[in-house]
Image (cartoon, rainbow, N blue to C red):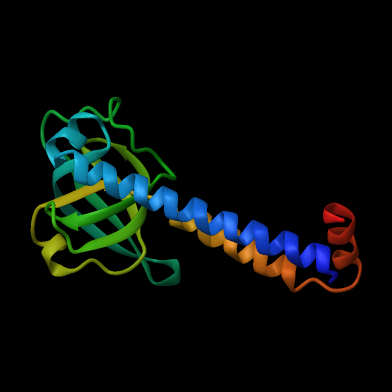
Length: 162
């Protein structure tokens, strides 16, 4: 791989890290600036959930069904299938990252990255929007894969960046 491609990938990686940090900061500052009740009212979080089912899923993940409190209208909730979320025991955690799956029938489903701590399983659960870490992980992987290219693929990168 030539110097031009290497520098371009270095710059891309640096910009990607900056974007990741900005996304994390945006979600963290939103949480600090507003109460959980306000985030729930804006559709960015769900509160007072009860874990109904925890099922094994591929890659050491768990599929979780949560019962919604009465009066929650999923049509106004801004969390939908594929959205990155975190689930915690009340407002202060502990937190587990995951992805929203679907909702309906008084329940929402999510895929959690790891087993849920007992505080979540046996207590009040909260789900709220989270920075898209999986997207950034995929970008990191793609940049690393581009760096490792040899032969014809490396030549294509030289054409693209050169």
